[in-house]
Length: 276
Image (cartoon, rainbow, N blue to C red):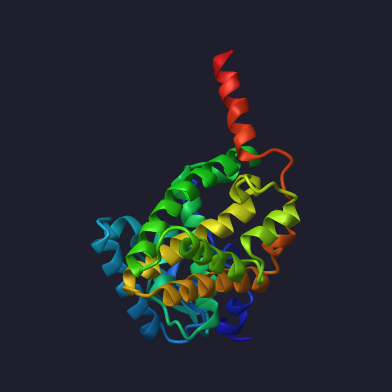
């Protein structure tokens, strides 16, 4: 079995390394194989674009792309050195965002690293948080990004009221296999006045956060104009997130359990504890 075939069976977590200081990193050589690049030269082009994006965003390139050397066996008990990079999670995210869009695995990589990067941005020890704390963190992020998404939609020509509700429904329909916001409320047994997002677990919230952030970015980046074009964009991105969940064997969002407590209840309980 070739290296390309071997690594094609691996996930991003499978190839994660941890150094002696407990810091995670990825080998660019290994990441390229997971992303189905047979040629290091072609993959290097994606790395260079990612470095430019890193620098343009105001980050230090060497903080995320560290030069490294990899030893490879060339036969007869002989090895030679080849250039490599030790990549941060953020670097991996930038690489897949600048990868070949014709590769199906790139879409999976974009979703995986974007969601994980956002979780790390929320709070450094996200993975060690309790479920209620995760829900609170993502819900707060969702509130901020929904404001930004609404602004991007408005710039595209979507007006408040019915048009904005239709735009929001387009995203839900893409992510939830055709279900509207009201359909989701009905499945969760919610009242008309209750906010769907307050009754989602962290996994469901994370999927919706990625849907919102990616739609926001695409509307702005591609300067999309027109109500129908904005709706179509929101639907397609929701559907893409859903397809990725399906590809990795995840549970569809409409089938995830509804938490017993709402985010509002958790917030009230925490405020009560502070007052004691």
